[in-house]
Image (cartoon, rainbow, N blue to C red; front, side, top):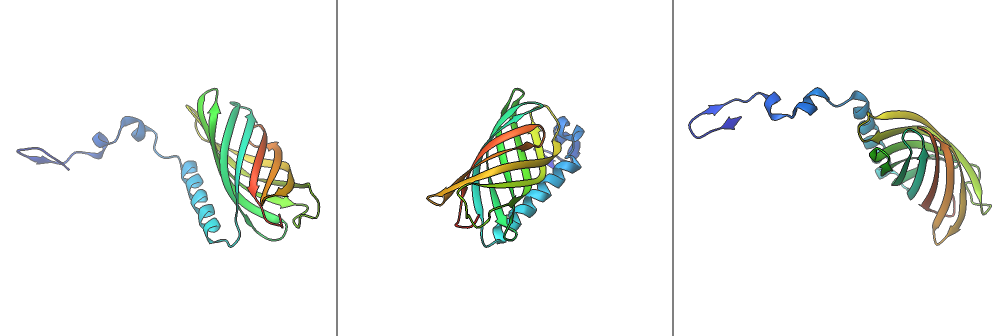
Length: 176
């Protein structure tokens, strides 16, 4: 309700909300992405053991981008880690970002070797300036490096909205 000095009148909501928001309401897929993100955060908050990671990725497709991000993984058993990460960066169209939900399968979860391969998959949502949100399947292979001061470095390559390669630094335990 909008009040003036002499009178009170009811103003329709369409005059209070900008025209671009009225024409482009929240996409159901964006709502889904938000709900999945909140669900993953709640799982991570309740998990006993968590691993925080920081990453830098180069994505070589529509449009090419460089992203820096952070994520969280939770053990789902001896061999599997589930998690999510969020990243932001730049593409030729301007600001670019993404949200990944994934599961990784480690071939050496007990760190019996210095370097150990892993593979995984999941879903990724890509956000770029002047483009709608795009969803892709995510598939990747990686190699975990040795444990140094409770930190581990990994190298990853895969496909998810284009070819991608990344470097990841994780807080690590004696078990992967």
